[in-house]
Image 1 (tube, rainbow over the protein chains, first blue to last red):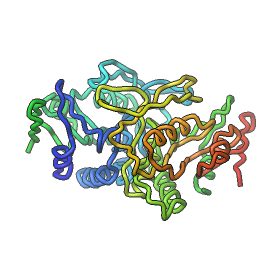
Image 2: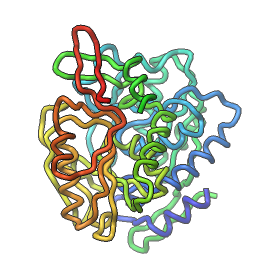
Image 3: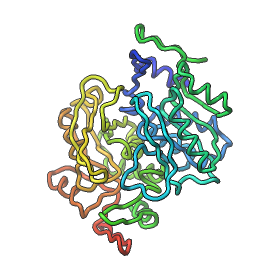
Image 4: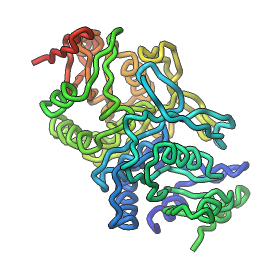
Length: 192
Length: 192
């Protein structure tokens, strides 16, 4: 998606350790209009698929998830990262290793909101090694629901998570795929 | 807002300890269409005010925040609850005591995204004792920005946080205010 690639070049900052800082428009301050246009694009890509739930993971997936679900006119369901007082009853859980936070955590989805007659689109802001997606796909499978695919804002192609999932037959649509990033020059190369 | 009150009566569940579970439409599964209508209502209430930033707090504020910011055509900024690898540089911080999680945590907003020429609308899903709002207002004040007011989905009126802020001259608009809740009967009384 050209608009997103242009925005990454304009406002994204590359740091050592494969860190791309896009917190001016994606995961701290959110450019809601940009997310809305991503939602429109993703709706077009999955046109004809009867998505009944958009599934994401807190916290930074919620913004993209909302704006995508708004185009599909279906609810957004977000996996929680820790058990709170307000989640009771039966839950699906899976384990996710976080690249950003350098830890492993549990993700939790209430069984009330994901059923075997659901067709699920998984949405997230970033895709690196694919650990969050693998956890969310695990939860979709536990529910016996159908996975339509995954829609991502920014995929770090050089970390291989997206291509690994594609090789397994999972449909992964990323609005921008970065194949190379250089923290000394700040140069970013997108996949054609 | 009648639509929200009806939805709370239909799908909300009252538990002991003043817990209202609305995770079927507000803070686990999100009814994006309902949030969009709240955004429209809030835009009407603050019509004529030139809001430049909507400010909320992760995680469950992000959904409402996005759908509100979408109507104001301005960015959403969400305060983070812990310092991550991806937030660098100068930040505003404040302390918040959580009613739901029974702990105190720091909230953090990058100084890059909140300036003294901003007019800020604070948005959140819940208002109980008002601790999250007090922390967010503190951050708006630290930035020297102008506070337009606070817009909330569900206010637990009987916990007094909203009225305390109103008494201090803060404009607080809640889409539903619950004045009484009974976990034995499930009965919910809304403020007229």
